[in-house]
Amino acid sequence: MEFKPTKILVPEYSEVNKHRFLHEIYSLRKPAVLKKLDLGVCKTQWTVDYLSRKGGGREVKIHVSEVPQMDFLKKNFIYRSLPFDVFVHRASAIKHKEFFISEDEKYYLRSLGEDPRKDIADISKQFPELAEDIQIPEFFEKEKFFSSVFRISSPGLQLWTHYDVMDNLLIQVTGTKRVVLYSPRDAPYLYLSGDKSEVLDVDKPDLVKYPLFSQARRYECTLQAGDVLFIPALWFHNTVAEEFGVGVNVFWKHLPSECYDKTDTYGNKDPTAASRAVQILDRALKTLDELPEEYKDFYARKMVLRIQNKVYSTNFE
Image (cartoon, rainbow, N blue to C red; front, top):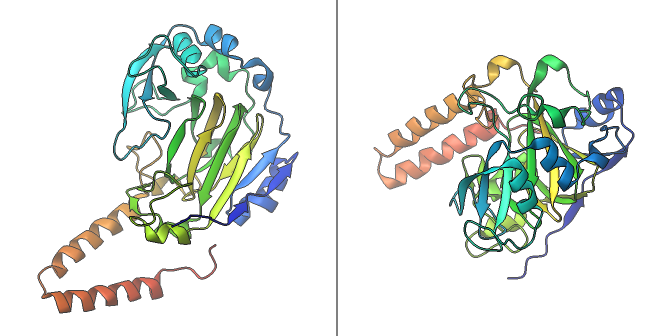
């Protein structure tokens, strides 16, 4: 079965200030590419040599994969540590003289807090000498800030489709990156396992195994160096680094702080009310197992209808 998805282009906006962002873009709760923002000197400064010199020899934990498509569900990668300057040079190359798995292996850095179990990623703390080069758009109140994640990807690297529970700006400082997004409304077609989709190849999906995936509406954009992508909470996204790329993700709390899990340092745990609801649902489904199949089917359908009638929004797109 040939897969030819209809692509919806993510709208672009130029020279956006905070007022325009909040009133014209943010309230729509849809992805948007923001162009021609003042991001500081990082756009011109962050070459491979500059990054390796400024970042120095500190150890960083990285993902290493033999194939371009990293799969977090099947864990088709290994974790390794390298000095940052060595890592940057390796990640920027297509072939490697020194490697862990193969000369074609791909690298991915997602910065972490000093103690990932307790500390959030914050570029100003983990990479202060690089943080001074970048000017993060002040489109949200400072007290809403959650994290700023420094990312570096090998050319060709594709990351799994997933959603985040907080709003974020993906700042593409260098390189080009293709981003494919899906609306939260299309979750039924994405074959979810937690916050991730089982469909790894969004360009050539196995429609025999994942037949409903063809119904998901595909939003797409290509970020050039200096572009910023606004990704609202719960929007699924899949990225491909078309070139060696460096970026920074900035996450902030769209909901009141008490809605989020206080032990979450990555920003990927569902809101506490959602987690409680899922636990209750799991108990309800387990209870239904006590019934004969015909009754179980009937009452499960009643539950689905009740959820649709009581919870589903008719306004949200």
